[in-house]
Length: 341
Figure 1 (cartoon, one colour):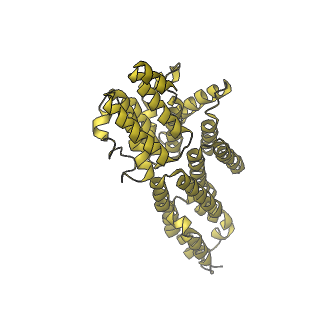
Figure 2 (spheres, rainbow, N blue to C red):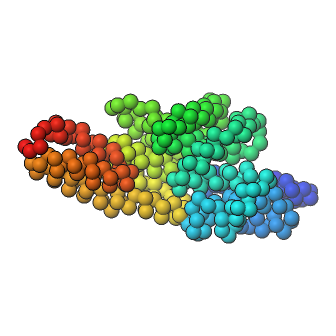
Figure 3 (cartoon, rainbow, N blue to C red):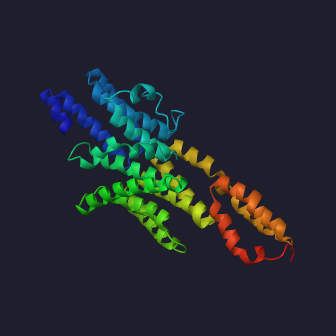
């Protein structure tokens, strides 16, 4: 209606901004990517025809992100292809904000968290916390920054405190907005609560993390945010492999995430996850675990070498170091005995 009103009165600039917001909203509420991509193509064409370059530039970054997620462009985190060239957009002041929003989203969906974490630590981003009104996708931008920070905090012991402090700062801002009855960010807060709990959990408190991730998945799915329900399941699977060592439940959540991403039309992410979790999905990790335990044939040294050597190396490669810890705990008494039974 706003678009039509603008076109009727000759206010084509604001009419085109309405189209930008319309397409962004379709993405944020989890509409099929094919539909969003088609709308991007039509709207950018109209903007170029009307010579509304700023709006076209902003939407082209979102269009390229969609193409990457769909697996059409051949790229994952690099926003270059049919809709835009990353090198051209990254150096433009006009396109900087939409470019950063699209870039950090691509990085998070394809598991490259360092870009988003470093971006979140830049002082210039403090302005987003003071924003009154403005782009409605700011909350999504902040969410992706916090997600990157928590992910990198798990990877870097050296930078953990710094990453955690900024992530908690963003999470508090989102939580405060939720308390003020912002109805559109409950799924963001629930996912970040689970991510934070992974880093804060104490021994034998994994049940709390399980509950938080399940709440995030359910809340996101119930509201129609299929992409964020899938993202939550994917991160839950990472926790189950790296911390809990629960292969079966991890596989269940990976398969759930794959189904949701497929329904959304994000075949680029589906291919990425199939490659990342190939050994989990094919049952290779479970078979390897059975073989490792089968090596316990009376030679403790051989079994210990397997857990600390080949097994640790392969489980680390698979992102399933939690399985090694489970094996150590399960056979703690045996590993402490003499070399032969």
